[in-house]
Amino acid sequence: MAERNLDFDKIINRENTKCLKYDFKEKRGYPEDVLPLWVADMDFKTSSYVEDAIKEAAGHNIYGYTNIRHGDGFFDAVSSWMKKHHDFDVEERWHVSTPGVVFAICTAIRALTEPGDSVLIQQPVYYPFSNAIRSNDRKLVSSDLYRDVYGNYRIDFEDFENKIAENNVKLFILCNPHNPVGRVWTKDELVKIGKICADHGVCVFSDEIHFDFIWNGDHHIFQETDVSFREFTITATSASKTFNLAGLQQSNIFIPDESIRRRFIHAIDATGYDEPSMIGIAATQAAYEHGEEWYNAMRSYVEKNIDYAVKFVSDEIRGVRLIKPEGTYLIWLDFTENRIDGKELDDLIINEAKLWLDSGRIFGKTGDGFQRINTACPRSTLSEALNRIKQLDLKRHL
Image 1 (tube, rainbow, N blue to C red):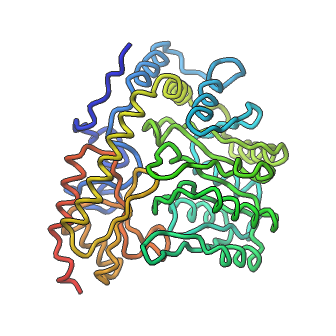
Image 2 (tube, helix red, strand yellow):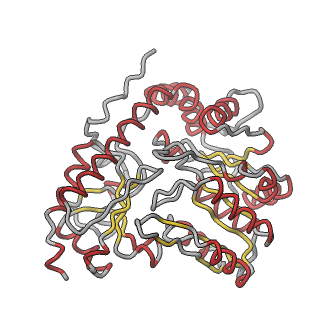
């Protein structure tokens, strides 16, 4: 059987499909005529092997309780992908299935901290981290990333350790690779923060959901950069970003330490969540077993989209800066040279350019003056969005 879904230039109409990206403009307060390039899912059909596996599962026509069991092929598919693509040797006893990584983050917060405890993040960072901390009545602490003279984001290790000590931090949520700034952390960087966490008794939740999108450098699984880190780390992965399966609610969480794993599972039990999605299981297994051709073709297309965007911004949009991300399919547009207030920039993007992007402000105060764009879309869609930004008269608003 040949892969059928390799036309990434094709425009797929996602409207009126209960699609969060397209069908909730009015509910979210956006004009109906905005072009959406915000939430991180793709505007591509996923692998035809995934499509066929879902059809086969649905064709059984009994949709009762399902679960994953030893020897059914699911874990073998997941572990084979981890080994082949990340040299990550996972053990079956480490594995816990959740309906998503954000669910797993909230679970880890409840399992490993108490109300009022401090949880550390590195802003600007994926905004559900902040929401998860605050909604669970924990104290949000940020050791903000800083930009060097070239505009690249770096970790302030002294500040990182000071924030942990001063706030008695219990849990650190790591974004690896980092969303939205696109850093792929080096092994040395990860080891350095891991040793700081170890010295202060801080558990680490490592969100590695974007790890299949690396453009420069090598991705390092945090817990494997030093085997001692396994004692205090939860590693979160999913096929959802790689194969566009977010709506199917299945993620794979790896917890080597038995005590942490037991506390994590207990916290899941307290939510009432039990059996994973039957369709999510089928789709994930098919993706990891048969999706290699689709993944490689999609990845090549997305990288060309990113390269196109970098060149377009450099050549065509004055006063906006874009550094090619080392990882993820998200680009982080820097409008700060224009000295436009973040709220005013949002208004320009939404009401003049007619774009629905992710405002940098939602990623923390250090995101003010930035916009995040999802490049996992047909080139024509990305081109249209960038041309709309080009047509803005940014200088007029100084």
